[in-house]
Image 1 (cartoon, rainbow, N blue to C red):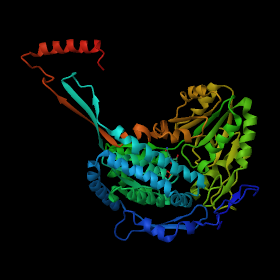
Image 2 (cartoon, rainbow, N blue to C red):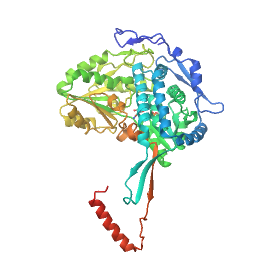
Image 3 (cartoon, rainbow, N blue to C red):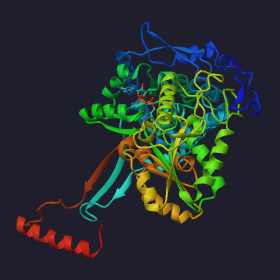
Image 4 (cartoon, rainbow, N blue to C red):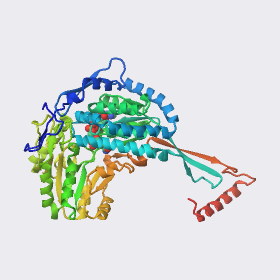
Amino acid sequence: MTDTTAVGQTTGRNPAAPGAARTVASAVPAALVARLAQGVTATGEPELVHTTAPLTGERLATLPQSTPADVEVAYQLARRAQKAWAALPVRRRAGVLLRFHDLLLKRQDEVLDLIQAETGKARLHAFEEVLGAALAARHYGRKAPSYLRDRRRGGAMPVLTHAIEARRPKGVIGQISPWNYPLELSVGDALPAFVAGNAVVNKPDTQTALTALWARELLIEAGLPADLWQIVIGDGPVIGPAVVEHADYVSFTGSTRTGREVAQRAAARLVGASLELGGKNALLVLADADLDKAAEGAVRACFSSAGQLCISIERLYVHRSVAEEFLRRFAERTSALRLGGGLAYGADMGSLVSDRQLETVTRHVEEAVKAGATVLAGGQARPDLGPLFFEPTILDGVTPGMAVCGEETFGPVVSVYRFDTEDEAVEAANSTTYGLNSSVWTKDARRGRAIAARLHTGTVNVNEAYAAAYGSVAAPMGGMGDSGLGRRHGSDGILRYTEAQTIATQRMLPIAPSLGLDDEKFAALFTTSLKALKVLRFK
Ligand code: NAD
C-alpha cells in the first residue's frame, strides 16, 4: 500500500479518513529523523540500523546503534547529571513535568504522526498514549512533593525517640521498553523516576525509538537537564544486559520470557526491578449486562491498537442466557470496524507492527480453525490494505489444545466461551498463569466489584475495557503471577524509584541501662513500659 487512505474492512463502504493524503515519508522527513538521531548515546562510528513503517513497508528511519560500551558511557553521563538534579527542591523538578504536560498537549500532532508511523496503529489509539503520558505528568507533577516528603513515624520510645522516614532517589534507573506503547512506556514511566530525583538510561525498542527520542527532546524543552535521560539503541540481547548491569534499579516492560531473564540479572546484582509483562486477559459478560454497551466495550477491549496492548482482552466469557444475542451484536460491530492506515483520525483499527506479529496472529487463527474453531468475524490477513493488516477476529469453539486458548496472541483475536454460573466464570477467568487485567460487564456495579475481588488480576475494569483502571493514574497498575512484579502509577509507581531511609534521633536517655539502673532493673522497667504502651494503644 503506498497511499494512506483509510479503507473499509470488507465492504469498502467506509469513507476515507480526512488527511489521508499525508504519507509517512512526508510526516516523518529525513531531516527530523537526523535531528532526533542525535539524541542516541552512541560514540565513534556507530553501526546503523534501519526501521520500516508497518503501514506501508517503506523505509522509515536510519539510526545509530549503541554498543555495550556506549551503555557504560550513558550511565557515566547520567550519574554525573543525577547528583545536581537530586539536589534541587522537589517542586522545581515537578515543574518540569507540568511544563511537559502543556507542551505535549500543544504539540501532540507531531508525536501522533511518529507513533502511527512507527507502530501502524490508528490515530485514536496513538492518542491514548498522549492521554496516558499527560495524566502521568499531571499526577506526578502535582503529587510528587506529597509522595516524597519526609514522614514522621512513631519512635522506639515515645518522646525519647524522634523518627522520620525519608525517600532518597535510587540513582540511575535502567529502563527497557517495548514497541507497543512507545510514548507511554518510555516517558510515561520515566516521569516519576525523574521527579523522584533519578536519572534514566532508557533502551526503547529500536522500531519505536523515534517516539522516545522526540519525548526526550520535549522534556528537555520543558527544563530537564539533557544528560539526565540517556537513550541507547540496539538489539535487546546485545545491549539489554548492559542496561541491567549498571542500573541502580530496573524498570522493564515487555514479554514474560525476557522479563524473567532481566529479573535474574537484577537479582544477581541485588538491585530491585519492576516487571510489567504479558497477559491473557478475560472479559466477563454477566446475564444482566447492558448488551449494547458490553458489545461496544468488548470491541474496544479486544481491538484497540490491533490487540497489541498488554491489557487488551483475548478471552471473552459470556453468560449462556445472553450469549447468542451478545455475540450477534459483538460480531456485527467487529465486522463494521474500518481498518485504515491514514495519518489522521477516522480509522477504527490500524495494522500490526511486524512480520513476527503477523506470523503469530496468523498461526493462532489458522491452527484454531484447522482444529475445529469457528470464525464469527474477521479471520484473514489483509495485504490489500498494507503488508501487516489483519482483520479483527472473533473465534468460537476454541478448546484447550489450541495455542490461542492459553498463549498470549498479542493481536486482534479473541476467543469466546459460554458459562452458566458466576463461580464457573470466575474459575475460568482465573485459569491462567497470567494476571494482568480483566473486565466485568453488569448493570449491578456492586456485584461487578464483588466479582472483581475474586479475579486474580492487578487491574479489573467494571463496565469498561481497560481505560478506566489504566487511566486512574493515582491507583497502582500492574500484574499478578506471570504478568509481573511491582506496579506503575500511584504511590507504588514513584516510591519504587526511591530508597526508604529512616533517621531516628534519640533524646535525653539512651535505649540502654542508664541513670544507675542495672541490667535487670532496666529490663523490668522496659517490660512495664511495653505493657503500658499497649494499654495506651500506642502503635
Ligand atoms: P520483548 O520482551 O521481546 O522486548 C521488550 C524489550 O526488551 C525490548 O526493548 C527488547 O529489545 C528488550 N530485550 C529483548 N531481549 C532482551 C534481553 N535479553 N535483555 C534485556 N532486554 C531485552 O517484548 P515485546 O515483544 O517487544 O513486547 C510485547 C510484550 O510486552 C507482550 O508480551 C506484552 O504483553 C508486554 N507488555 C506488557 C505491558 C505491561 O504493562 N504489563 C505493557 C506493554 C507490553
